[in-house]
Amino acid sequence: MMKCRLMSIILIICLAAAGSAAGDERAPKPIQTIPIEEIAPVQEGQHHYLLLCTDVWHGNPGNLGNTDGIVLVTLDTRAHRVMLTSFIRDALVWRPMDENPEEMGFGRINYIAKRLGPEALCRVISQHINVRVEDYLLFDFTQIANIVDYLGGVDIELNREEINYLRKYAVPDGSVRNVKTGTDLRAGATHRPGLYHFAGHSAVIYMRIRKAGGGGDFMRTQRARTVMSTLADKCREITWEEAEALVNNIMDNNTMTNINLEEMLNAARYAYSLRDCTIEELRIPPDGAASPITFASMAVQEIDWEACRSAMANYLKNSFLVVEDD
Image (cartoon, rainbow, N blue to C red; front, top):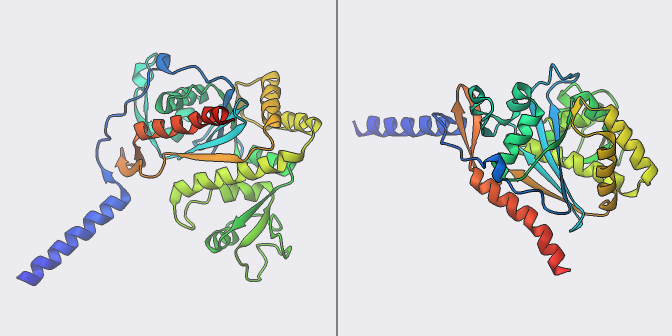
């Protein structure tokens, strides 16, 4: 009898652990957002641009797909900083659509733009992190690949699990090669961890890796920041004329934006003045601020948005501490 009872307890513990790993099915906790009128104006010298990538190779305004890539670029010309803030795609948010009450409710962050448009996603992000975000550029996979190719590709350090994943995936022949040996990743030879050169298409595949190397969607956002930081590093030595040409390429390679050419050139001027900066990174949510649950048959991350707002405030506030130190 004691043995049976012990086995029953062990079985219950195992089932509970499995349920926790997958995310328990339950109603989410209430999410407190910041009323849009209470969000402070953007700090002097800081410029925020939301970069979005949909999960389709050929998108259009009528077929946006889910916004699986969400990165906020902050250019701080006052404190001389460049900051990348990425958002995990399965973060649970509240849609505070006061002007459209039937759209209020819980939802995954990567569904917002598809359902309500990029402007609505800007507003949702603003109300969750307490930072006024208004300017956006939205891309599909092909447009991201085109921009990476325009800049000559990217060099990225790969671990063994990432190498095995990419070799199995349908990356084009010759599009990933070992920088040291020049060997194509798809070739039959054994490949070791190290620095690999990526063409645009394969760089997109790399950014989407989620089931190799652990970390899930948290590591996916890290890979997106890695590619963006690497591209930024490549732009450190470009001339202003080359920067203007890059702006034209970006304007030709986006699905939707509310930034006109003059505003894009202004953004390029900010970035050009900061091209010698070290790229700083933040992930939303930070460590310890997310818990997996299942809601409405969806796997989501329940987020401590108060902790996210605190992390974001500290992140941006450091800009002004840097100025004071000077």
